[in-house]
Amino acid sequence: MTYTNDLLDELNILLQFNLETTQEGIKIHKTAAPEAIAATARLFTKGLITQPDGGYLTDLGHIAAEHAHATHTILTPADEISLKPAAR
Image (cartoon, rainbow, N blue to C red; front, side, top):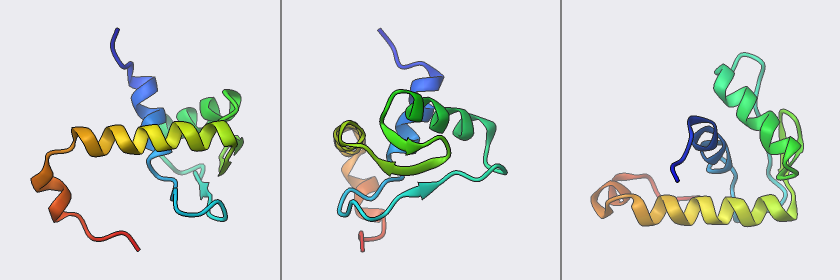
């Protein structure tokens, strides 16, 4: 089993959500990359976000985003994490 490009695109969209608050969503504009637009629409169809162009995470979407963030953190080498700016 492998991650398809579509799944990777969806994971990258989930990584854009701030997990520290439920009051902050995202908006994928019509000028975004076609892959991002399509991935966002698929996340909406799967019930993970509230709007076809972003919006907020649903309860299931929040769980998926938590797992996406955790996987990214686990798989990112420590030296790359230390170079990233601190979260606000």
